Image 1 (cartoon, rainbow, N blue to C red):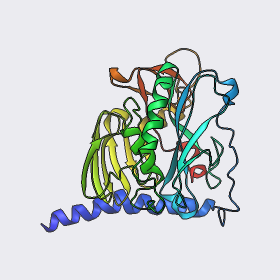
Image 2 (spheres, rainbow, N blue to C red; image 1 turned 30 degrees about the vertical axis):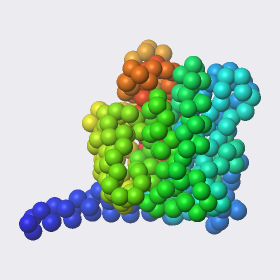
Image 3 (spheres, one colour; image 1 turned 135 degrees about the vertical axis):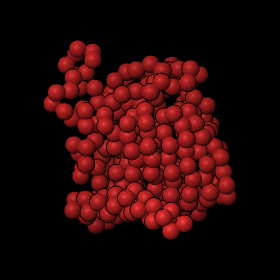
Image 4 (cartoon, rainbow, N blue to C red; image 1 turned 60 degrees about the horizontal axis):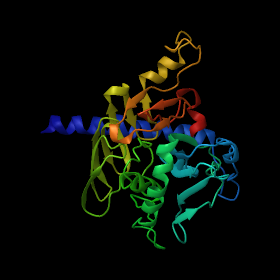
Length: 308
């Protein structure tokens, strides 16, 4: 019994305490705006002009959140447009007033001064068909009343994105491991499909839970943080750092070349998605791939400090 307790203590120290401490050190070393008024909320220039983008698109964006919370958490939003639309439509949840907001910020806005990344993208006819269903799910979001927002363990902004993904058929996306609140499923013991639609999640009031899925791998959710392994990605998931993959290290190697012979670096590999979710999707690498789920990385190793 004592041996098992020691193993548990070391597990917690190595997988939660140490990563959190390192993340805190990096975050404090970089610093952050003193208040939301001093932070930038302007367009980051991450997305192209919607008026020059002819196809329909659905995207999930993620960026580090503000002040000390950015050490441990990211904020996700949903951005989309139909073919022919000349502007993006963005959906977020915030912690004041009516939680669900439409176009409260530029589509690719800095969040507390932190630049967003596209972590999931669907385009073309599949996106055109999916957008009405996404809007219908947003209208049904159960925590849309004033006062229903709870920063931890949820429901919060990441609960919103995760709920819409889970409750919209065909919206299969591997979400950020450091999007605290994404695994809040409601009060009590709850079960739901994983956001990628390749497995399942169980959660107890958002405090503890687990996910087992092909895209996400195996995750333990403890106090909002995620510890996990993704064998297919050769990756581990840690609080503050998110997903750290061997493939990231390979991509940083000066001897790495893609297999297309084009000479361009392939920044992500891709997982096959269920046949029912056929469509055109792109990861943050901006490569067009059919019938794939983009592999998610919390941030590239080469921009470790910039991600906080």
